[in-house]
Length: 197
Image (cartoon, rainbow, N blue to C red; front, side, top):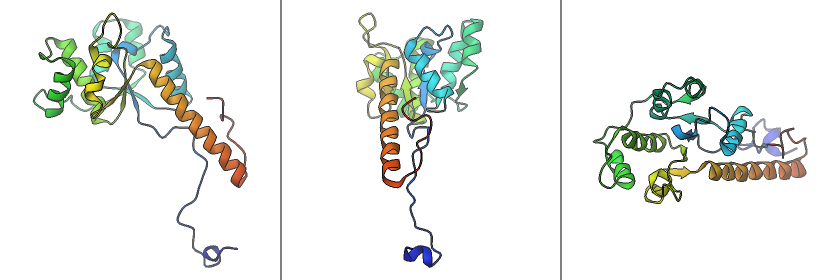
């Protein structure tokens, strides 16, 4: 018996298997990924992991408001299933707002949609969340949030839905590999979700 136990002292650190919920930031889903019709395969996968309590998904209050603005009942219902932030958006005079605005729109945000893009990025940064968006970074829309994320890499991590799925898969693999090593070293049983998420 170790001396610490004989003296009635618990060891300072206990190693345990990792829980199912990953130790990663919350994913903030942009308005364009509401996925009311379930046609976005990568978003479907993220939502399944959320339902299985593997990851956390939220929306910014700005994205939540945008999702309801067009009056589409399906989209509104889907948006209302998400947890969303309740803090006021970053003010246009805030240095963070200015930095994000100049990265996304060098000539300044010209309309409410562009202002909302800036707010959505700022909210993800304020919550230290991973922003998942389909905005930009494509042949048809080279700019947008994804196309300018390299300018914001010191503020917030921005991923496409496919990149978010790859990121989560990697973290699941790391979690499962740790738990397998734990069982080999210390015994016990692997959780039933191991290698199934």
